[in-house]
Image 1 (tube, rainbow, N blue to C red):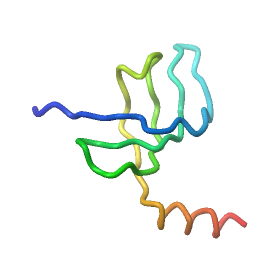
Image 2 (cartoon, rainbow, N blue to C red; image 1 turned 60 degrees about the horizontal axis):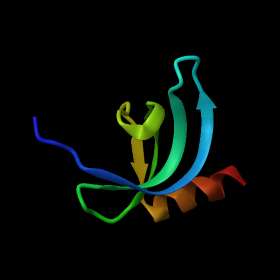
Image 3 (cartoon, rainbow, N blue to C red; image 1 turned 135 degrees about the vertical axis):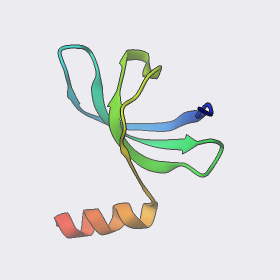
Image 4 (cartoon, rainbow, N blue to C red; image 1 turned 30 degrees about the horizontal axis):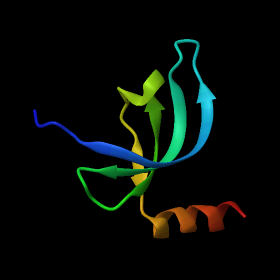
Length: 69
């Protein structure tokens, strides 16, 4: 399995925290050197491990925000 490289470009918000210390967050994340996208997933303390999540382009995030108004 190939290594996945990531960089959290901007931490936006912690949405919730489990007793284990894992947090569900929304961040701007660059995956494998690509442009950063909005990213929602759970992270281990220190961001060394993560769960499966969802990434959204800026356009997709704007559609969600508009739909929630």
